[in-house]
Amino acid sequence: MSNNNRWAMKTIMAVGLAGSLMTAAVLPAQAGDGGAIAAGIIGGTALGVLAGAAIAGAPHPPPPPVYYAPDPAYYAPPPHCWYEHHRVWDYDGDAYVVRPVRVCNY
Image 1 (tube, helix red, strand yellow):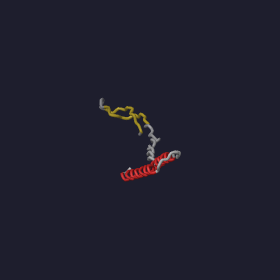
Image 2 (tube, helix red, strand yellow; image 1 turned 90 degrees about the vertical axis):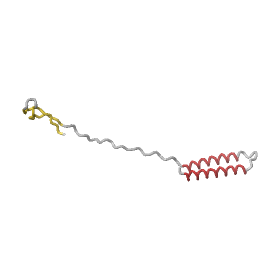
Image 3 (cartoon, rainbow, N blue to C red; image 1 turned 45 degrees about the horizontal axis):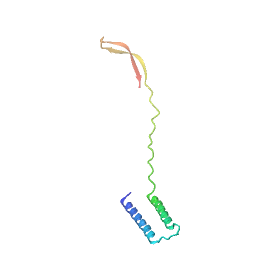
Image 4 (cartoon, rainbow, N blue to C red; image 1 turned 60 degrees about the vertical axis):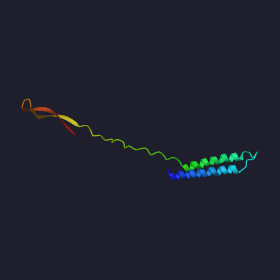
């Protein structure tokens, strides 16, 4: 709430309170009136509370929930692997030898 709104709200409340006090002080209370003055003060207070609540307004609604996209449903298939016989260099024997080698397609 900005300072201007607070100042206006305080001014309105002060004027309303002063007006209700002056009205209560000016009107003489008489015995046997059936509590009309008390009912007026209670009713005025209740209306003042309702008016104040209407001026204040409702609180802001909460922010909307955050949306997270689901994980993708497609996953790459595992690689297909097999063994083939290849000529490889054997460092111990200093010669080419034929050995099974695992080959995979990614």
